[in-house]
Image 1 (tube, rainbow, N blue to C red):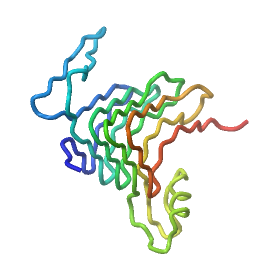
Image 2 (spheres, rainbow, N blue to C red):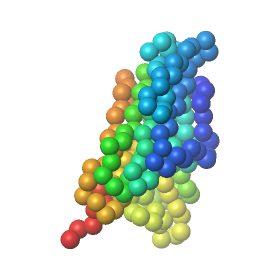
Image 3 (cartoon, rainbow, N blue to C red):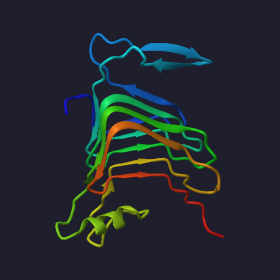
Image 4 (cartoon, helix red, strand yellow):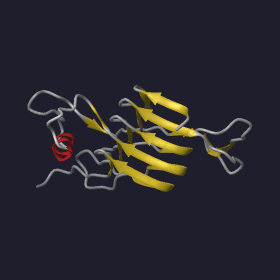
Length: 184
């Protein structure tokens, strides 16, 4: 996969804001359309997209009390080695994660020191906990797309919309929306 927009560790964070990223071939035109006090990208004239990859625990995150929108447009999108796209919220929200991959979306892998004796099911159980460390102090994170409601509300979280020909999720990768509303 030829990466034209690549994050190897690190990432972008815009709490409550909107992030729109695209990877287009040279000589392509992306039009900006003014909408209130904001600009939206119009990709209708783009013929060839390029790839976007997030590796080595890289992230794109708009999480906040009311999370913002995330929109990625490209040919292939890869999340690997514990990378994440997050729009978590604490309040009722009306935002979304929109992923448009003309060819494929691949979510795979975990980060951290993986104990060779651990099964995939054991690693998945560890990363699903609030403190993802095992008894030996090894920490883990999985590659994921998440729009969780974190606490204090029984409201609606964010939507996750995926448009692609080929969706591949393996090696502990996840797409999730979880409401962590405390039980009474």
